[in-house]
Structure formats: C-alpha cells, structure tokens
Length: 252
Image (cartoon, rainbow, N blue to C red; front, side, top):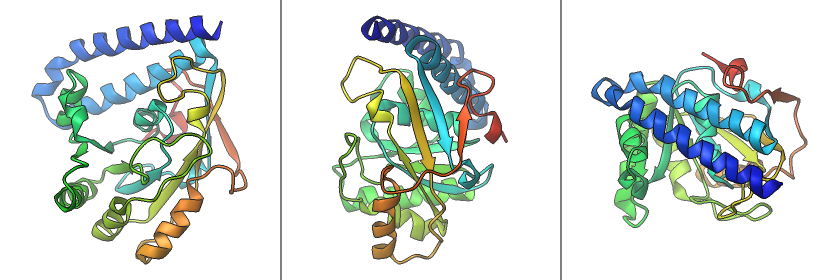
C-alpha cells in the first residue's frame, strides 16, 4: 500500500509541478514578487498531496521563533527533498541557498533564477563564499528570509556532518540572528527512496542564536540545535496540510 500511495503521489506531484510551471510562465516576464504567491501555492498543494495520498502530516514546533516578515536567517537541518520546498509554505519571502546545478533544470531552474534564489558553486571555494555573502546581504536588505542548510547537503536521520562556513559568514555579513531548525523529514521521505512513509514530519524551530555570536560558539550551538533528539520538544503547533491552512498561522 505504501508503494502504491507513493506512486500516486509522485504522479500527482509531477503533474501539478508541470501544469503550474507552464501556466505561470508569463509571470517570469514581471518582477520577482509576482512569483511568490505561486511558489507558496505550489508548496501548500504538495503538503496537501502528502497528507491525502501518503498519510504524511506536518507539525511545527516553536513556531513563535519564526519571522512573520522582514529579514531572517534560518539554518535548517536537511534530510529530505521535503526540506527544499516546505519553507515556501511557512515564510512570506523565502530565498534558499542551493547548489548551482539546480539552475540548469528546466522550469525549476527558471523559477529559481527569477526569484533570486542564491545558487552556489560548491566547487568554487573562496569565490563561492564571497558570492554567498554578497547575495545574502542583498536578500537581507530586501527583507527576505534566507534558508541555508548549514551542513551543506542532505544528511541521513541520526547522522551529523561538519557545519560549513557559509552560515557563519552569512550571520556576520547580515548581522542577523541565526534561527536553528531541526527535522526528522528523512524518516518519511528518504534520500533516493521511492516510498513516502506515513506519519508526522516534525519541523522544530529553536530560539534564535543572537547576532554577533563568535564563529566558534555559533557553530557549536548550531550543531546541537539542529538535531531533533538533544532538545526537549517545545509546544507543538499541528498543521493541517491543506492548501488553505498549511501555513495559515504564519501567513503575513
């Protein structure tokens, strides 16, 4: 049954993505802001499909720590493809830090480019870090919420990787507090796993690490805060993953 439900979800996901991608192509001719409602709507539809077809619900803990608008820096654990779209549903004006190769994808790459997602060439070394800092400062000046995966890649549940220098560089350049986020999304939507396992995906938002924290202390605190297990759960905000209510408590 899980396999069949996952198949139906994958089919529905690609149909929705392609149809919306094609229908909204004219918006690429306008300003970036025209596309934000489309990105949010797409994310909410996918959340609804996950609930209806796969039995996967979203629960947000510590939602009071999320910004309702204005510049912010979110450092989120990355376990699943789920993490790459859910923030469009939870925040008003998201800019992801993503790998440059994604810009080469048809449709997805066009929208990522138009919405000024921060694409980083991970093989470029110091120049990649300079580009990240420059683009991050522009995003912050425009009042956007920057989402970065501080370990730099997807990590299997229960595993950890070294915190990469990008998040500390962004924090120093923008002067923003760092909001750590833990998740267990990989338990339900695994990397290279066709099956989508039913259950509740938890997104646990931790209290912000204050601006101006020294790099070593920031990295140390962040390494602990983005793991779900070491922290006691905060009051949870259950989210009904429908198109209308998936992010309603955080709607700007």
